[in-house]
Image (cartoon, rainbow, N blue to C red; front, top):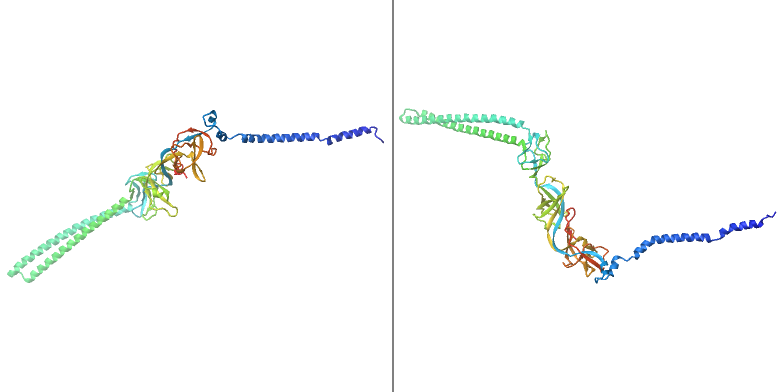
Length: 446
């Protein structure tokens, strides 16, 4: 059966097909998307393009006239200074440890006595002869009492021997007188020869008794001397039970213990004393600097934990260099300060002398593969000048060659300046030197 509205069906179909076949809406959408992308890209690239198209200040100022016209004032202003003749002190940074100048080890001078009392502690300041500790005295006091009795016995023995000697001398005198009488009577025949011989023998016996009495007296006197020597020894030991400081100073350590038996053969001393409290910095020095080291050199020492440095002076220079470390040693004397602790770390700047020459700020010196150079301003134009840099100290560099006192050096040179750039110099004065012990303030600038 034929549809009553064939035309209507055909028109409807044709109407639905037209939007799919007509390309104009999609082209418009694509055009809009492309336009948005291009605008976004331009928005991103525009700042960089503007930055790249903007002329650099130095390049613009290169073309600025230098004849005093208004355009000349637009040249880049740079700070310049004139090198100044100065003497820079050459110093060497050394490090080491604090040590007592003279360390005294105190131990017992008698054996086998117990420690009864300890009178000082580590850190105490002591005077020469001050008692540090006491040992037991019981045994020695007993020996002293025995010696007192022996001394009395020796004195009695001497008295007895003196009496015996006097008696022997009297007997000898009587025997000699009897012999004289017998000899006189023998000439007259009153006394027999036998009696005379007997009396002569009595004289010899009396003389022998005198000699024996004298020897006995000598032995008794020697015994008394021996007893006296024993007493002196006991008294010395009694004195040594008081362990005393051999010199004034500060107690570094105390190893004595109550009740311990004091032995002189022990390896650890009872006390360690820093004589007079003097402390040195024992510092290591490179072998290349050792030939310039000598006693009397001034130094500024900063022990660990100190806010300010202390003045010091080189007191001792080692006679050799360690062949394994290639380092020598120096002793720097420090002033007495209760804050100084042996064993602490310390560093010092040792003054080696001065060098004279032109100095410029450290900020003015630059380095490249060919060495050191500075930028100078001549007739409003930047020029590169090669120099030989020497010492660096306090933010300054000593120039040994390449500059004159009339040159005007760019104070703060940087990569934005190149040789030939036109600039407007602004005169400045050389800044004051910096002082910092925390870094190597003086060294070769190279």
